[in-house]
Length: 540
Image (cartoon, rainbow, N blue to C red; front, top):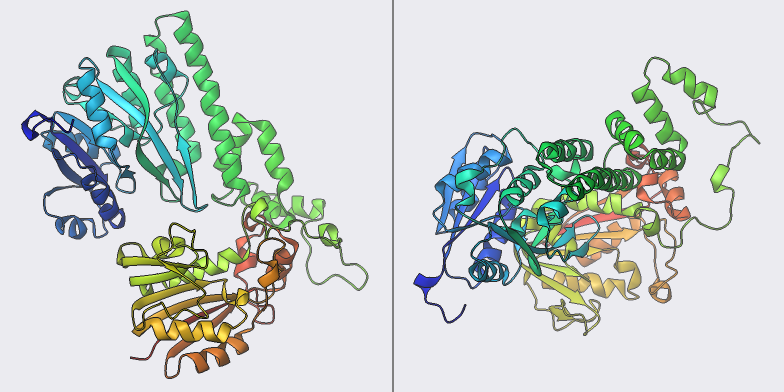
């Protein structure tokens, strides 16, 4: 395509529906402009947002901004179609982004196959909470309608490039709050030729605010969409694919629901549990068997309020007061080895991360400007978002490709003084023998008025893996107050503690975060300090 002139290139309209996801727009815009495809128009359809979507969009020249009262995703996409002028159309959700070469790859494919109504490609799934990226690459060479009956092999809407004439005949169904893209794929593939390739086009960000996080509604809607095709089936093979699709969707969403319930990513509501029971009884039984008594009590009370208390008392789960001497029921704690030697990572995630991330979330406004994080920049980007102008990483390993600085923070003359607006230093100080020198470096390299956000362990297991030989220290709030007073003279310092005897015990035993009820985590007892947090602002 490089040899074609600008007038030979079809105009691509990238339509971005946005509802309260304005913070993600700069990244989406940048991914479009990095495509090196010159014939692009960008249209943002603000579907009644109450955040700063308009302000952010209007900062960028060449982006068309359209506002409508909140009507839902389908209506926003239809609005974008009406206001676009491109021969080819792409729909990019505000919190996702295009990968390099994505537009070019799809344009080239459509130019080579002029009969196609749309072409789709592969994508990356980015799991924000887990910090993981998974490639979603499927090879589908034919029978696209039949393949779509068995499941949505496309998976992500931004990988699809449509020809404009498609929307003369079909639009997004505004009655659908979910799966409107899958509905459109099926309707188009029933009538027109389509194609799929394995070039990666886009990245799909999965986080708690995705509409797809509502699994019971997603499952109900996807089966509704699939059932719309029942009267359009034309062969026994399509009928078999239709039946297989029903089972595929039930298996997929019941597994997703089970995993999210186990990890505490979604609440164990009556609707979620009933959905799991109906679609996969074996996973329902497995989930219920995995729950601790406090969680089970909560579920019974919530879903059987009339007789829940009596039932709990019959089960022996409702007890009051301290047990008598000699009557303590140790249960699973009656062991000398932990449940996990990986801080609970293998059981849904560490307990201490709950306190660390709550602290950073609460101090998110302080994470801004030029920020330095040790090891990686996950927390900087997650909690700083659009406030970050430059994100630096300090790592001790020179082979780390993401590191912008290499070295030990306790002896790092290469770090420039008075430079950083923010330093994020979580769960690292205890691995540094000369931790006073590390704090001195933090003070030196911060700008006047800059902020250090620091967390250190109090009550903690010692790592069995790569950090066991450098696990030197544990701290208390009193120790941190004295250390920070020395390191940040005249600075503004706030030290807090998090934890209680139950949280500390759960952490020592290696229980996973989903296994510990939130109400027990939120109880504060300064005599059992699991995590100590520090916010230190350098004097101006």
